[in-house]
Image 1 (tube, rainbow, N blue to C red):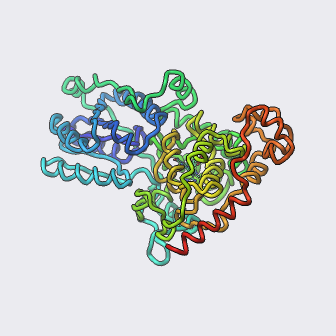
Image 2: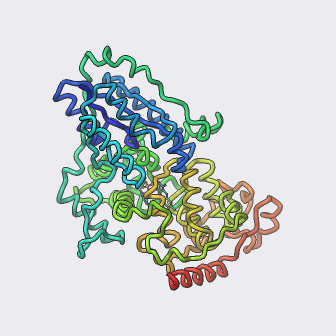
Image 3: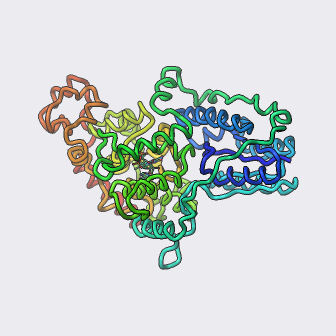
Length: 494
Ligand code: FAD
């Protein structure tokens, strides 16, 4: 009888909890291991998965399929049109293959948990054991409790607890082995499964040929690339991370988010790898760059813990109910100017154009554009959250929702009265020479000096206008006052 591992966003063989368990069970019982991946075009629509993300995932699947084939482990890729069909189809396949066990890593979003519950039930009815385990976070959601016994809603005390929990449970960072060779007979018994090809993207999520080539060059896929990028980052960049991580013109961050989002790299591996290059085994000591980088990976865990504890954040709701009464604007002209990088605020526009062109945007810029949309334009943050998911290659529900919650002050620890970014000051501080702006806004290439941050306000208006660069669509000071009034009014009436 076979053992099956169901791959989801864990497209790797190394350090994969459910896969390691499945492989061990198969080896101990001398039975074959089979990999399964289920693709649902309707699911991509429902979850706003961006075409670049689908493309990255399919390319990663090809790498995974090759790696598994070398171990004589087949990877079967099943397409179901409707996502509601997935549970029944999975169970049918398990029966066809005579599988006794199904293993999978848990995904914490509401739809995924409901789907898993259904499969557990269907499997149980047919005498198949299903084991769904924690894998994506370094520390299991629900493990860390504040002094009052609740989930932390504030990052800093949560991070201290996260670090100390790992120090007390170092096995959390142990490397899990990849599967071994399947029994020799597997190729004969399952030869049909090896023939299953990785499909092309569904029509609504397909990149045009030019974009496909560009994204493949920008974002090489698969777990070997992830490891290469991790090694390179830890060798060359992590030392300067604390200093450079906020400067968008410098490649000072790891660009590994796409790999965490697709599971081509595990967060445990990243933390362990960085820690092992430090001069201390503590996660909160030694090299400042390494410490800071690990604390950023902790943000990823933090937002997943928040999602698990307060699942209603998956349902378009603000974290605090009183924030549901803020009166948002639905001004299409403003929203479109924002999406197209034509707001007249150079840093905002550069960031949005970077996202459209590369499927990625620097963290500092994500905060600036999210604050600009929700505060300067007072546009409903959910429209921005959605737009990010539809365009990012690293789109991850918990991190995206958490980032929007932070910048739009509708998430945990909202701070609406203190956290309003001034896009011009942010630009002067984090892109002082305008290098990032000039890279993404060709209209402003010729603008010299400080005028680059605010061409119309600093004497380069004529030049900007001639080059076709938009005038500011709002005035920041007035927009800030309007936002403060709207937040106060909304919260008071909530
Ligand atoms: P590095 O600086 O090298 O950090 C290492 C890793 O730590 C990242 O790859 C990421 O996994 C994690 N990380 C870093 N910062 C954060 C953070 N603020 N929140 C959560 N995890 C973090 N990240 C996503 O992965 N997917 C998203 O959809 C996403 N949407 C965002 C939306 C908004 C509005 C904001 C403000 C942030 C969002 N982020 C998201 C977080 C962050 O911007 C990216 O993770 C980061 O820019 C990725 O670049 P990097 O891999 O070079 O990061």
